[in-house]
Image (cartoon, rainbow, N blue to C red; front, side):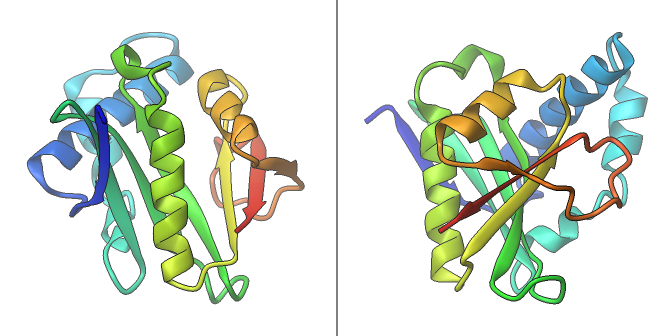
Length: 162
């Protein structure tokens, strides 16, 4: 198989590069101009990625034919809703979209979540991130009412029972 998805520290070289690419794309789309390196660095500073380590969460990296191509994070949210977690930083590099990697990425993070006792995965996203919204809908995530207001950029919320 061309794709593999495995847990990895969010601050490994490949994970860091993927997180930078993710932030570059979402910020550039939002601002309707390319994000600068300084803006990307600032956006990633104190962004809560430290929650993507046990015991509060995890991070996975997808590789296509050995090259880092996608990532996703999971943050356990037991205090907010027992048995739940939030899916975050889901990203597939543009050149790998349409190759099946997004579905494998979601399947892997869902498997990791189940192993941690998660029964409900939730996430928020923006309306302009149409590829992400399509990926979630295709893989059984349904739109739900807003379950938080802490992300000022969130416009759509999804959830899936595992």
